[in-house]
Length: 265
Image (cartoon, one colour):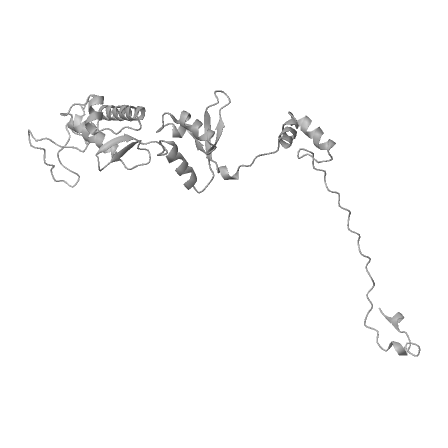
């Protein structure tokens, strides 16, 4: 019995060790022993998470005292970040100076200090009135947004409301201010007591059915009434007139002319 050689079964079997030759046949150079290959790597995930956590703590610390300016050293001492942690301090300062809309930290380049940056840069009654008077629309401001940089906003708004300098919408639950608008006191006039009494004595229907009945009783059509289809009469067909063969002329001679219309086909 003849025996088969291993080479005849797998003539093109790959080598168990990778070749140093490239596709074009030239050999690749191996890195020298002891040499370090430097790769460009992003910030470590754990370090990045720690950075975001520290930035969040810094923002919350500034939010607690929105009127106060802090130095970078004050913030680092609060976060307990040591001076030898140069990398973290560098990234923290880059976050503080970021010029994007989501940055909640304001930086003053003259004093080199930081403070919390709310949605509206309004921190007292004077700044609120100036903002409301300068805005192009009559849109109201949400008090929850004002509270970010104005901790005692509720107490100060009561003063402006008592002076009739602002219009306020209150929460039904705690009667705190919810939304504020500018108010021009020169447009306010006294109303006769008789008109006030009649106004408040007018009852408004509580349900849609009561409102519908009240409108029908007053001879008005409610908006919820079903629309009736408009009935249109069919157009009458015009009777077709028989068209004569030609235009009759010489009508003054009709008595002496013969009528040959019966000879038409």
